[in-house]
Image (cartoon, rainbow, N blue to C red):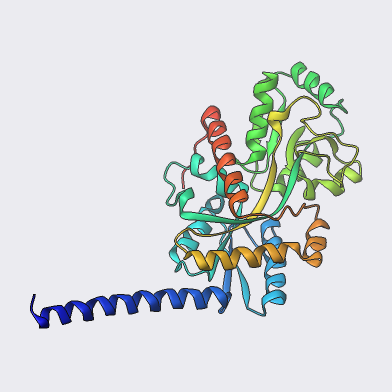
Length: 331
Protein backbone atom coordinates (compact mmCIF):
# COMPACT_ATOMS: atom_id res chain seq x y z
CA UNK A 1 0.00 0.00 0.00
CA UNK A 2 1.35 3.45 -0.86
CA UNK A 3 2.02 6.05 1.80
CA UNK A 4 -0.74 8.17 0.29
CA UNK A 5 -3.20 5.26 0.48
CA UNK A 6 -2.25 4.47 4.06
CA UNK A 7 -2.67 8.09 5.02
CA UNK A 8 -6.09 8.24 3.40
CA UNK A 9 -7.19 5.11 5.29
CA UNK A 10 -5.94 6.62 8.56
CA UNK A 11 -7.79 9.87 7.91
CA UNK A 12 -10.98 7.92 7.10
CA UNK A 13 -10.66 5.84 10.28
CA UNK A 14 -10.08 8.94 12.39
CA UNK A 15 -13.09 10.63 10.82
CA UNK A 16 -15.27 7.63 11.68
CA UNK A 17 -14.00 7.61 15.27
CA UNK A 18 -14.63 11.32 15.65
CA UNK A 19 -18.14 10.95 14.24
CA UNK A 20 -18.89 8.08 16.62
CA UNK A 21 -17.46 10.00 19.55
CA UNK A 22 -19.49 13.07 18.65
CA UNK A 23 -22.62 10.97 18.41
CA UNK A 24 -22.00 9.29 21.76
CA UNK A 25 -21.09 12.61 23.38
CA UNK A 26 -24.26 14.20 22.05
CA UNK A 27 -26.40 11.33 23.36
CA UNK A 28 -24.67 11.40 26.74
CA UNK A 29 -25.14 15.14 27.13
CA UNK A 30 -28.81 14.89 26.11
CA UNK A 31 -29.30 12.00 28.56
CA UNK A 32 -27.61 13.87 31.41
CA UNK A 33 -29.58 17.02 30.65
CA UNK A 34 -32.94 15.32 30.11
CA UNK A 35 -35.44 16.80 29.54
CA UNK A 36 -33.25 19.55 28.06
CA UNK A 37 -36.08 20.68 25.78
CA UNK A 38 -39.86 20.57 25.74
CA UNK A 39 -41.13 17.02 26.27
CA UNK A 40 -44.53 16.08 24.86
CA UNK A 41 -46.67 13.44 26.56
CA UNK A 42 -49.03 12.06 23.93
CA UNK A 43 -52.35 10.78 25.26
CA UNK A 44 -54.71 8.61 23.23
CA UNK A 45 -57.90 9.96 24.77
CA UNK A 46 -59.67 13.27 25.16
CA UNK A 47 -58.93 16.04 27.63
CA UNK A 48 -60.58 15.29 30.96
CA UNK A 49 -60.32 11.51 30.56
CA UNK A 50 -58.58 9.47 33.25
CA UNK A 51 -55.38 8.96 31.19
CA UNK A 52 -55.33 12.70 30.44
CA UNK A 53 -55.64 13.58 34.14
CA UNK A 54 -52.77 11.21 34.92
CA UNK A 55 -50.62 12.70 32.16
CA UNK A 56 -51.23 16.25 33.38
CA UNK A 57 -50.44 15.32 36.97
CA UNK A 58 -47.20 13.69 35.81
CA UNK A 59 -46.32 16.66 33.59
CA UNK A 60 -46.73 19.03 36.53
CA UNK A 61 -44.63 16.77 38.76
CA UNK A 62 -41.88 16.46 36.16
CA UNK A 63 -41.87 20.24 35.70
CA UNK A 64 -41.36 20.76 39.45
CA UNK A 65 -38.81 17.98 39.65
CA UNK A 66 -36.65 18.83 36.64
CA UNK A 67 -37.37 22.47 35.88
CA UNK A 68 -38.14 21.41 32.32
CA UNK A 69 -41.19 22.02 30.17
CA UNK A 70 -43.71 19.21 29.72
CA UNK A 71 -46.86 19.46 27.63
CA UNK A 72 -49.77 17.08 27.05
CA UNK A 73 -50.96 16.43 23.50
CA UNK A 74 -54.33 14.67 23.21
CA UNK A 75 -54.74 12.50 20.12
CA UNK A 76 -57.89 10.44 20.65
CA UNK A 77 -59.12 7.99 18.06
CA UNK A 78 -58.89 4.34 17.01
CA UNK A 79 -58.67 3.20 20.64
CA UNK A 80 -55.31 4.94 21.09
CA UNK A 81 -53.69 3.81 17.87
CA UNK A 82 -53.51 7.36 16.50
CA UNK A 83 -51.52 8.42 19.54
CA UNK A 84 -49.10 5.51 19.14
CA UNK A 85 -48.52 6.40 15.50
CA UNK A 86 -47.92 10.05 16.40
CA UNK A 87 -45.22 9.12 18.89
CA UNK A 88 -43.47 6.86 16.39
CA UNK A 89 -43.46 9.62 13.76
CA UNK A 90 -41.47 11.87 16.09
CA UNK A 91 -37.67 11.58 16.42
CA UNK A 92 -36.81 8.89 19.03
CA UNK A 93 -34.83 11.31 21.19
CA UNK A 94 -36.74 11.36 24.47
CA UNK A 95 -38.74 14.47 23.62
CA UNK A 96 -41.95 12.60 22.73
CA UNK A 97 -43.36 9.96 25.09
CA UNK A 98 -46.52 7.88 25.00
CA UNK A 99 -48.99 7.70 27.86
CA UNK A 100 -50.24 4.23 27.04
CA UNK A 101 -53.13 2.40 28.65
CA UNK A 102 -53.44 -1.30 29.26
CA UNK A 103 -55.90 -1.66 26.37
CA UNK A 104 -53.76 0.28 23.93
CA UNK A 105 -50.49 -1.41 24.82
CA UNK A 106 -51.47 -5.03 25.49
CA UNK A 107 -54.78 -5.62 23.67
CA UNK A 108 -54.60 -3.57 20.47
CA UNK A 109 -51.72 -5.60 18.96
CA UNK A 110 -53.99 -8.67 18.90
CA UNK A 111 -57.32 -6.94 18.33
CA UNK A 112 -56.51 -4.87 15.24
CA UNK A 113 -55.99 -6.59 11.91
CA UNK A 114 -54.21 -3.71 10.19
CA UNK A 115 -52.28 -2.12 13.02
CA UNK A 116 -49.60 0.27 11.77
CA UNK A 117 -47.36 -0.30 14.77
CA UNK A 118 -46.28 -3.28 16.85
CA UNK A 119 -45.53 -3.87 20.51
CA UNK A 120 -41.79 -4.07 19.85
CA UNK A 121 -41.85 -0.45 18.64
CA UNK A 122 -42.15 0.76 22.24
CA UNK A 123 -40.03 0.47 25.38
CA UNK A 124 -42.11 0.32 28.58
CA UNK A 125 -40.72 2.80 31.12
CA UNK A 126 -43.04 2.84 34.13
CA UNK A 127 -46.52 1.67 35.10
CA UNK A 128 -47.70 4.87 36.72
CA UNK A 129 -51.14 4.06 38.07
CA UNK A 130 -53.47 1.10 38.21
CA UNK A 131 -56.91 0.30 39.56
CA UNK A 132 -59.27 -2.65 39.54
CA UNK A 133 -62.46 -2.72 37.60
CA UNK A 134 -65.62 -3.25 39.61
CA UNK A 135 -68.48 -5.57 38.69
CA UNK A 136 -71.66 -3.62 39.36
CA UNK A 137 -75.37 -4.20 38.97
CA UNK A 138 -78.40 -1.98 38.92
CA UNK A 139 -80.18 -2.18 42.31
CA UNK A 140 -83.18 -3.79 40.61
CA UNK A 141 -81.15 -6.96 40.07
CA UNK A 142 -82.03 -9.25 43.02
CA UNK A 143 -78.44 -10.17 43.84
CA UNK A 144 -76.02 -8.91 46.47
CA UNK A 145 -73.31 -11.56 46.03
CA UNK A 146 -71.44 -13.04 43.09
CA UNK A 147 -73.13 -16.41 43.62
CA UNK A 148 -76.58 -14.81 43.64
CA UNK A 149 -75.73 -12.85 40.50
CA UNK A 150 -74.65 -16.06 38.78
CA UNK A 151 -77.96 -17.69 39.63
CA UNK A 152 -79.91 -14.66 38.40
CA UNK A 153 -78.00 -14.62 35.12
CA UNK A 154 -78.61 -18.35 34.74
CA UNK A 155 -82.33 -17.81 35.24
CA UNK A 156 -82.29 -15.19 32.47
CA UNK A 157 -80.15 -17.10 30.01
CA UNK A 158 -80.06 -15.42 26.62
CA UNK A 159 -81.82 -12.32 27.99
CA UNK A 160 -79.40 -10.80 30.50
CA UNK A 161 -76.84 -8.36 29.10
CA UNK A 162 -73.61 -6.80 30.28
CA UNK A 163 -72.25 -3.35 29.46
CA UNK A 164 -68.64 -2.66 28.54
CA UNK A 165 -67.10 0.80 28.32
CA UNK A 166 -65.69 -0.03 24.89
CA UNK A 167 -65.28 -3.06 22.65
CA UNK A 168 -61.83 -4.60 22.76
CA UNK A 169 -61.10 -3.52 26.34
CA UNK A 170 -60.79 -5.43 29.64
CA UNK A 171 -64.39 -4.42 30.40
CA UNK A 172 -65.45 -6.31 27.26
CA UNK A 173 -63.25 -9.37 27.70
CA UNK A 174 -64.01 -9.82 31.41
CA UNK A 175 -67.67 -9.96 30.45
CA UNK A 176 -66.79 -12.54 27.81
CA UNK A 177 -64.94 -14.61 30.42
CA UNK A 178 -67.85 -14.33 32.85
CA UNK A 179 -70.19 -15.52 30.12
CA UNK A 180 -67.91 -18.48 29.36
CA UNK A 181 -67.72 -19.34 33.05
CA UNK A 182 -71.49 -19.21 33.55
CA UNK A 183 -72.39 -20.52 30.07
CA UNK A 184 -75.18 -17.98 30.14
CA UNK A 185 -75.40 -16.44 26.64
CA UNK A 186 -74.92 -12.93 28.05
CA UNK A 187 -75.54 -10.20 25.49
CA UNK A 188 -72.65 -7.75 25.10
CA UNK A 189 -73.67 -4.07 24.96
CA UNK A 190 -70.59 -1.93 24.15
CA UNK A 191 -70.35 1.81 24.81
CA UNK A 192 -67.98 4.57 23.81
CA UNK A 193 -66.54 5.32 27.22
CA UNK A 194 -67.21 4.78 30.91
CA UNK A 195 -69.53 7.78 31.26
CA UNK A 196 -72.24 6.58 28.83
CA UNK A 197 -71.81 3.02 30.09
CA UNK A 198 -72.42 4.06 33.69
CA UNK A 199 -75.29 6.34 32.70
CA UNK A 200 -77.15 3.39 31.20
CA UNK A 201 -76.29 1.19 34.17
CA UNK A 202 -77.73 3.88 36.45
CA UNK A 203 -80.87 4.03 34.32
CA UNK A 204 -81.27 0.25 34.40
CA UNK A 205 -80.97 0.01 30.63
CA UNK A 206 -78.35 -2.71 31.13
CA UNK A 207 -78.35 -4.72 34.37
CA UNK A 208 -74.64 -5.29 34.96
CA UNK A 209 -71.13 -4.59 33.77
CA UNK A 210 -67.47 -4.21 34.58
CA UNK A 211 -66.55 -0.55 34.86
CA UNK A 212 -63.90 1.81 36.19
CA UNK A 213 -63.84 2.15 39.96
CA UNK A 214 -63.20 5.90 39.85
CA UNK A 215 -66.35 6.44 37.77
CA UNK A 216 -68.60 4.05 39.70
CA UNK A 217 -67.48 4.76 43.29
CA UNK A 218 -69.73 7.79 43.98
CA UNK A 219 -72.77 5.99 42.56
CA UNK A 220 -72.01 2.93 44.67
CA UNK A 221 -71.72 5.13 47.75
CA UNK A 222 -75.08 6.72 46.91
CA UNK A 223 -76.75 3.32 46.53
CA UNK A 224 -77.49 3.87 42.85
CA UNK A 225 -75.24 0.96 41.80
CA UNK A 226 -74.40 -2.20 43.69
CA UNK A 227 -70.80 -3.42 43.82
CA UNK A 228 -70.56 -7.20 43.57
CA UNK A 229 -66.78 -7.69 43.32
CA UNK A 230 -63.55 -6.01 42.28
CA UNK A 231 -61.09 -7.47 39.80
CA UNK A 232 -57.82 -6.53 41.52
CA UNK A 233 -55.43 -8.80 43.41
CA UNK A 234 -56.57 -7.29 46.72
CA UNK A 235 -59.57 -5.42 48.04
CA UNK A 236 -59.78 -1.77 47.15
CA UNK A 237 -59.40 0.79 49.95
CA UNK A 238 -62.31 2.62 48.31
CA UNK A 239 -64.55 -0.47 48.72
CA UNK A 240 -63.06 -2.46 51.62
CA UNK A 241 -66.19 -4.57 52.14
CA UNK A 242 -66.33 -5.69 48.51
CA UNK A 243 -64.50 -8.98 47.83
CA UNK A 244 -62.16 -9.69 44.96
CA UNK A 245 -63.19 -12.14 42.28
CA UNK A 246 -60.16 -14.23 43.21
CA UNK A 247 -61.54 -14.52 46.76
CA UNK A 248 -64.80 -15.72 45.24
CA UNK A 249 -63.14 -18.51 43.30
CA UNK A 250 -62.75 -16.76 39.94
CA UNK A 251 -59.05 -15.81 39.71
CA UNK A 252 -59.22 -15.91 35.90
CA UNK A 253 -61.29 -12.72 36.08
CA UNK A 254 -58.58 -10.86 37.99
CA UNK A 255 -57.02 -7.85 36.31
CA UNK A 256 -56.29 -4.17 36.77
CA UNK A 257 -56.39 -1.34 34.31
CA UNK A 258 -53.27 0.83 34.17
CA UNK A 259 -51.69 3.83 32.52
CA UNK A 260 -47.97 4.16 32.01
CA UNK A 261 -45.12 5.87 30.21
CA UNK A 262 -43.55 4.31 27.12
CA UNK A 263 -40.85 5.57 24.78
CA UNK A 264 -40.01 4.63 21.20
CA UNK A 265 -37.79 1.55 21.33
CA UNK A 266 -35.31 3.27 18.99
CA UNK A 267 -34.51 5.87 21.67
CA UNK A 268 -30.79 5.69 22.63
CA UNK A 269 -30.13 3.63 25.75
CA UNK A 270 -28.62 6.49 27.80
CA UNK A 271 -31.71 8.60 27.14
CA UNK A 272 -34.02 5.73 28.12
CA UNK A 273 -32.05 5.30 31.34
CA UNK A 274 -32.40 9.00 32.12
CA UNK A 275 -36.15 8.93 31.52
CA UNK A 276 -36.51 5.79 33.64
CA UNK A 277 -34.64 7.29 36.59
CA UNK A 278 -36.66 10.49 36.41
CA UNK A 279 -39.97 8.62 36.07
CA UNK A 280 -39.27 6.43 39.11
CA UNK A 281 -38.38 9.51 41.16
CA UNK A 282 -41.54 11.30 40.02
CA UNK A 283 -43.85 8.45 40.99
CA UNK A 284 -42.15 8.13 44.37
CA UNK A 285 -42.96 11.76 45.20
CA UNK A 286 -45.51 11.93 48.06
CA UNK A 287 -47.42 14.84 46.50
CA UNK A 288 -47.97 13.05 43.19
CA UNK A 289 -48.87 9.81 44.92
CA UNK A 290 -51.43 11.54 47.13
CA UNK A 291 -52.96 13.31 44.13
CA UNK A 292 -53.33 10.05 42.18
CA UNK A 293 -54.51 7.99 45.14
CA UNK A 294 -57.25 10.57 45.75
CA UNK A 295 -58.58 9.52 42.33
CA UNK A 296 -58.84 5.88 43.54
CA UNK A 297 -55.63 4.82 41.79
CA UNK A 298 -52.78 2.77 43.20
CA UNK A 299 -49.28 3.98 42.30
CA UNK A 300 -47.24 0.81 41.79
CA UNK A 301 -44.17 2.57 40.33
CA UNK A 302 -43.39 -0.69 38.51
CA UNK A 303 -40.57 0.23 36.18
CA UNK A 304 -37.89 -0.97 33.81
CA UNK A 305 -37.51 -4.73 33.30
CA UNK A 306 -40.32 -5.56 35.76
CA UNK A 307 -42.78 -3.46 33.77
CA UNK A 308 -41.50 -4.93 30.51
CA UNK A 309 -42.14 -8.47 31.79
CA UNK A 310 -45.62 -7.51 32.99
CA UNK A 311 -46.49 -6.00 29.60
CA UNK A 312 -45.26 -9.11 27.79
CA UNK A 313 -47.28 -11.43 30.04
CA UNK A 314 -50.45 -9.34 29.71
CA UNK A 315 -50.06 -9.13 25.95
CA UNK A 316 -50.04 -12.92 25.76
CA UNK A 317 -53.06 -13.21 28.06
CA UNK A 318 -55.19 -10.75 26.11
CA UNK A 319 -54.13 -12.24 22.78
CA UNK A 320 -55.58 -15.58 23.90
CA UNK A 321 -58.84 -13.90 24.94
CA UNK A 322 -59.09 -11.89 21.73
CA UNK A 323 -58.71 -15.10 19.73
CA UNK A 324 -61.16 -17.04 21.89
CA UNK A 325 -63.79 -14.31 21.66
CA UNK A 326 -63.46 -13.94 17.90
CA UNK A 327 -63.17 -10.18 18.31
CA UNK A 328 -61.51 -8.19 15.54
CA UNK A 329 -61.29 -4.45 15.01
CA UNK A 330 -60.22 -2.43 12.01
CA UNK A 331 -57.95 0.58 12.35
